[in-house]
Image (cartoon, rainbow, N blue to C red; front, side, top):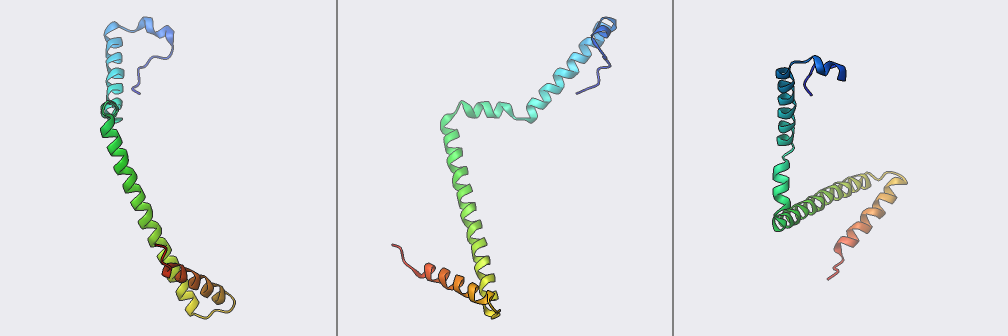
Length: 114
């Protein structure tokens, strides 16, 4: 907020009218700029168009779901690859558990559920 130079209510009587108007103008202008930055007008237009709002939500939900699916697939493939590499190293104790996990995952991937 802009500096007004007013310290308390008792100073208001000593300030010239022109300075009060300038201060009010600066505060109002700052508020209008903040509202422009928040894009509140576009939001209210969107609320008056419910079908557009529905379509935007459907598309954004589909994009979010696709992103989650792709991200999880990449993450799971990376984990399986790392487990296969660790299993190939024939580490004692850990290697047996990793080999079992990889075998279970590969078996599940080969199953046809349809």
